[in-house]
Length: 135
Image (tube, rainbow, N blue to C red; front, side, top):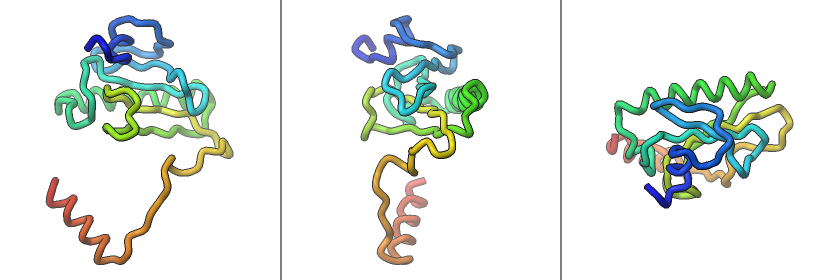
């Protein structure tokens, strides 16, 4: 897809690549949460997790796992934050996973959005039932 920035990187556009395989391409985020923030994308254009073919899931997430370990090891990080958006807050409409190095006291608190509460256990059960039925 010509207008997709991540497809451009897959096809050789300048980027700070850290890994490439038939399953995924990984490169540094140009607007990192912390230095060493990596993006991992499938090499074919898919916009969301649901569009990734089932046979590609395991190889893709094996690369995500490998990069999470590598980021932690290479940077001496205490851990990583691994995240993905689907449509909402997805700045580039190409599936991508963020691997962000973390250290204790780095200032990143929880998720990037406010939390809410269920009104009751009944409401909680209602949401659980809706999602379970959709699976």
